[in-house]
Image 1 (cartoon, rainbow, N blue to C red):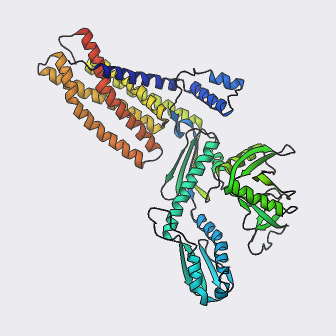
Image 2 (cartoon, helix red, strand yellow):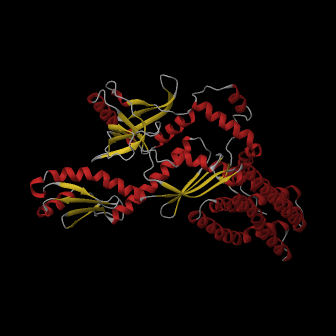
Image 3 (spheres, rainbow, N blue to C red):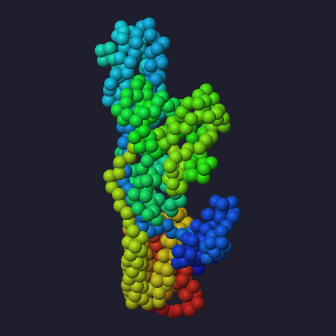
Length: 555
């Protein structure tokens, strides 16, 4: 039997040692988790630690690895939401924002087109009526000049606007190419903002991914309920600062052109008529933090970027003594009177907030506004008790499967079966070490993948051992039979596992949620199983063979 090269033996032992060391923290999951949370909190506080944080940090040595396998929603408990993004909202916003530009562009052609006014139309259409239809050609050319090239791979060379004439009206729509690009941007922006909001709340390993054309799957382990998750991500949090025209108690008051009637959030029965076009929007915000006002009540401080700071400062300087509405999601949360010029682009939002409400509002504003409203098609809350039951059931399944496999290998292959069982232990350690290293999430289907891996791991050893038996029946000496057994079984092992690995890769690429959890553990398990079957068991057999030098072997 040819000895394995020294560098191979060293490398195998190092990988196995890494697997054991990397998997050990998962045996002390709660302690290591408290240690990791304390370390993160201390770092966030600039190195300052409370006695409780120091005690939690001391539960696990700093010099040992502390990466853990993240537990999925079905194991830890938490909230599950399936949301549909109303991408049509963005079309309306685009048309509303386009109208002032169209009006200003046509104003330069007043002699040719006469007076212009916005006519009633669907939300995704801007209809402009000309008093002099004979100037339609010049008007169409001017409005088409507001379009630009579509920013997408499939829309190169196409305009963002579709501008046509219907009688004395100019009809403006987003082009089909621009609608597709807008839908894609809206979904991607919604994904990013939801991810920011969830991350701001300090939750651990959420699953946030697109499903279908306009749906988003959100799974957040460890959160109290689906309602709590909806409160965090369900608001659009569209903040704007608008000039106040008047204050009224008449809910049916006519706001007038280019104005809008909005209810007060803190004053029931009170309404504000504000200018429809904001002075500054929430898109210019760069920071928002919970704080307290001069009376010690919860509030939110904010800070604008350079552009927003200039606009905010110019407006406050020119409108001292006038009220200024702070509008959040279509409601006036505060309408203070401008007392003086406010330079620097920072201020404070006051209202009847609780500490929790001011904190959540700050999170929403920091994360940015959702580009469109979302409706929730499905929501579930999974309690931690159910997660604990799932973990217990998974442990039992894994232990029963492992025990049956161990007994079978011992009964069928004796000492060689013991070597396979030892390699199986290293295989399990490597799986958990790999999941911990990549930050993988373990789900209940993932546990099923591990149980399947246990059977697949010894399957490779069975191929090797049966091949060794076949070589022994051909009167090979023990060393040569072992060597040929590993060599000639290799192709069958590789072929079988490559096809299974391809299946796992396809499941990961096209699947979602639990399917991906199964695919990840199965894929990692295939790699570790091949490694332990081909190299670890061979190293154990070689060490035994060189120590005993048997004339014959019984497999």
